[in-house]
Length: 190
Image (cartoon, rainbow, N blue to C red; front, side):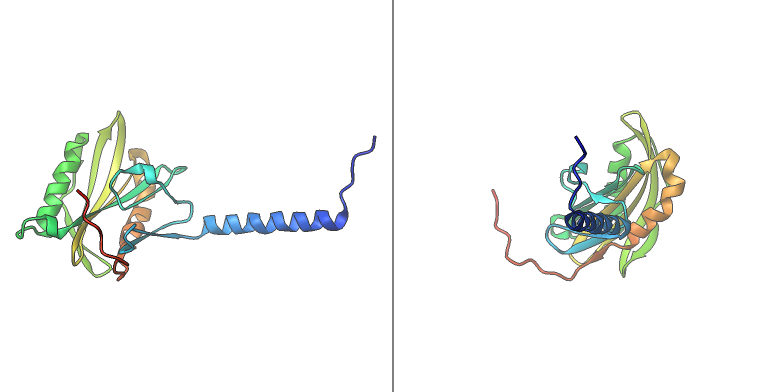
């Protein structure tokens, strides 16, 4: 029995559709992705190859990874209204830095250095430690916006930090408020 020959016109159209779909997929992989917090107030841009990863952290508002390169980022946002009136960016950075150090063994950190992220004051430091017997390196930036404090936490395997550092800096520097206001007032939950 001879093999079936597809109708050339129908086959050509199907092949063209497959090529167009594949090209669209490749284009989306080659472009940076802008991720927005669930409340729409903050954005972060991640490079091509990165994807949202909701399972990275329970309370982070933005979560993404490049699993192939073993590089990760989360943004944790805290409302200033929840802190005492004497809270400052330096105090917030000190508290969160100590908390990060307590979550790792063999932890070490550089002192926080002043940075500006899209016009917002910040403090940035490197941290290394062991989590579940894996050596990790972090670049962490605390940023103050009008109503919030944010932690932009990037990390990778210790052996990959040198090649990931510039990517982490670009991701962190892309963090920005959107200027959006919530569409409706949040309801109070018990």
